[in-house]
Image 1 (tube, rainbow, N blue to C red):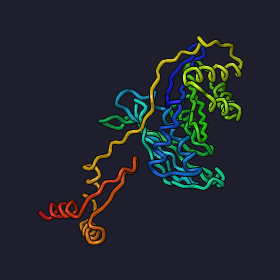
Image 2 (cartoon, rainbow, N blue to C red):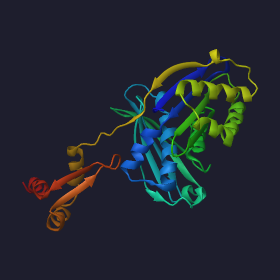
Image 3 (cartoon, rainbow, N blue to C red):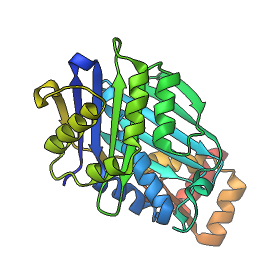
Image 4 (cartoon, rainbow, N blue to C red):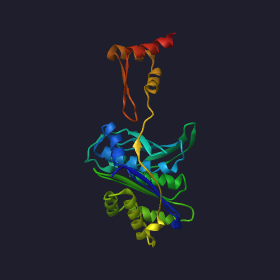
Length: 291
């Protein structure tokens, strides 16, 4: 099943809903950083839930999501664009599978979102992240910072990586969203999510089943599918931008790099692409400063 991001609504219940399958995209990001074990699993789930925010953006807007934890994972940073493109990195690259999830995330942390466009930062917010799950922490952010009742869940195994978000618009009962969150957390719903064969039909069927389980008599026609996007990775790094990092390095350190390594290699923090600068590149930086 190809990676897909879907946006739908249930107008008579005042809900907007989002589903993503991010198996290939999340693997591409994690593999670029050689992530393994539980670190890769958690990062994949976090990539999926971050992609759910893409339909909330207008053209030329971007969300930067920063998940900071006290556990071994420490920090995950994701940039999400309005066209379902995403990039990201994490502090921890390898965590053994026998480590408890509580040790990976830790007892507490914080989550911050910054919305920006190509010209300026538009707004930002930060909330406590103490739910033990990035999906629940992101839902809490929207509940508190945006005053928007939200339920989010992510599901991941070696073959798939999916996530679902439901938000209540004005006119809906916020307590009902908590009931949906509880149902999303159930193991049988996770298995249903990971067994989808086609995104559109699977999402419609899954959402219909979830809403009916909460006591609503709905038909397939009550769910309106609005947009379908294909998630992908991106990065804005260039050789010139990376050279700018070296421009901030003291001349003494540049001279040490020349004598020790005959240059420098810098990898992009997001996509891990390496940029190699030889001794002539470094000497030119030093010469410009002396002129």
